[in-house]
Image 1 (cartoon, rainbow, N blue to C red):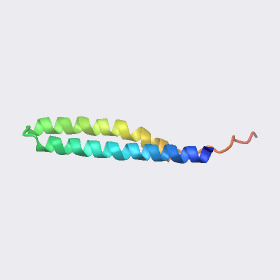
Image 2 (image 1 turned 180 degrees about the vertical axis):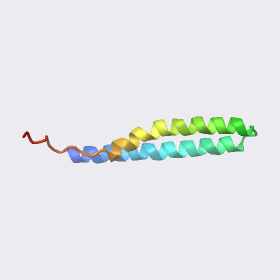
Image 3 (image 1 turned 120 degrees about the horizontal axis):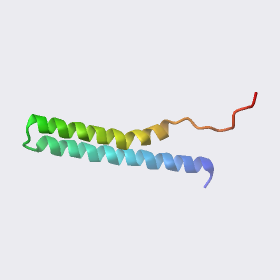
Image 4 (image 1 turned 90 degrees about the horizontal axis):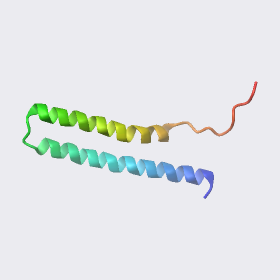
Length: 76
């Protein structure tokens, strides 16, 4: 497998992981909203879940959006 093919495969894996995580978090938010908890408890759980989601997904997104370095910088 060539370098470009590896990059494309890794991108697909990362995008697939992001999709799976989004589904997981969506289901978790739905479960929280269905519980008979007080507003304060729901707010705290939601905030924790949002922080967890950001910590899980952001590094994957950053890697996808990172610019590729294709050659060494020229010396002056």
